[in-house]
Length: 271
Ligand code: GLN
Image 1 (cartoon, rainbow, N blue to C red):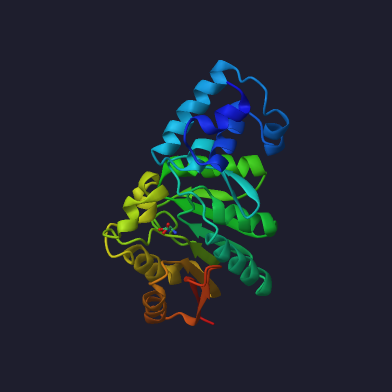
Image 2: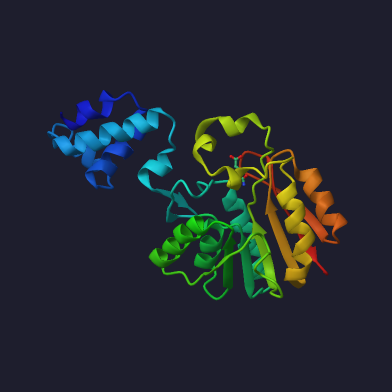
């Protein structure tokens, strides 16, 4: 089968087919496909490409099939043990980098790091910041560690259920993209979410229980004048604000994602 025939042979979206075929060939450049569109493909490549196309048609996320996703211009390895990093989370990174630079903070904790996305992006921009990343999942941590090694970034990783294994430690900044989808949200049954780790998406309750737990314990782990930033759902901003205020945070503020949806709320401890 020729390259140009293969791209249309298995019924996937054309752009997905290009990326999956390049991946099956072990190549990166889309221009290769254009320059070689009349080349005959080896049978084993067609087999791999055909089976990945079948998976894609069943809904398996492209990032899991390719094994990576770009986040904050970093190429991150992803497996089905981690949430696929999303563009809206870059807003949290942007805010964290701003705060750490502006207040000259010396340390940050990324709670529930998954692939390591937030911790690695911030560490990439601020090499002198001391960055810790935690996750309850050993499998997620091994993906995150591999990403840190591949990028040569000195993030410290700790296996911990929220602050469970982090007793007595304090940071200047704590950032988290916790599971905030409510268990009865129909989105869990759609698109990529069907294939992502459920525990990274939903708390199994109203979507706010992990946020409540993080906010109520954060004061024991923040330095005075430190900041807590939390990513949340588009309809949770009011609740997250009041959870922060009830727990004594001040300067509570909200940022919207590129789609104009409320997305990250932050507050300062003992400001
Ligand atoms: N932003 C994700 C989604 O709704 C959810 C991520 C999360 O729960 N932290 O698709």
